[in-house]
Image (cartoon, rainbow, N blue to C red; front, side, top):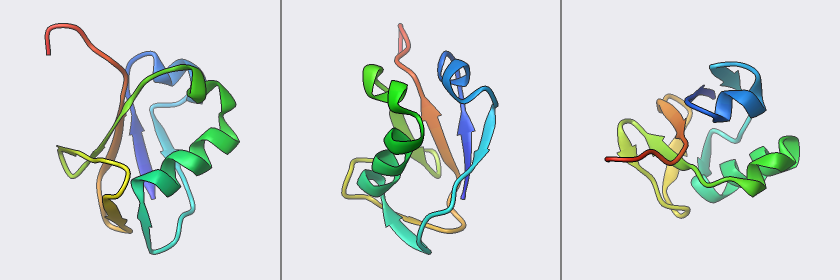
Length: 77
């Protein structure tokens, strides 16, 4: 799975795109859990998971072909 990283989150990941190995279908909660393991400092920030252009809640299932973006909080939006 390829993640697109935006804003101040790139300071944590050190890249704008990140490859992550997850099951063929995983939930947003599983994605977050794996990211928190690899990047503990993510637990100190708030961010949205966007799947195929739509904000995804923890129970949302992500397929292997999905476009995933991690967005930090932003003002005016």
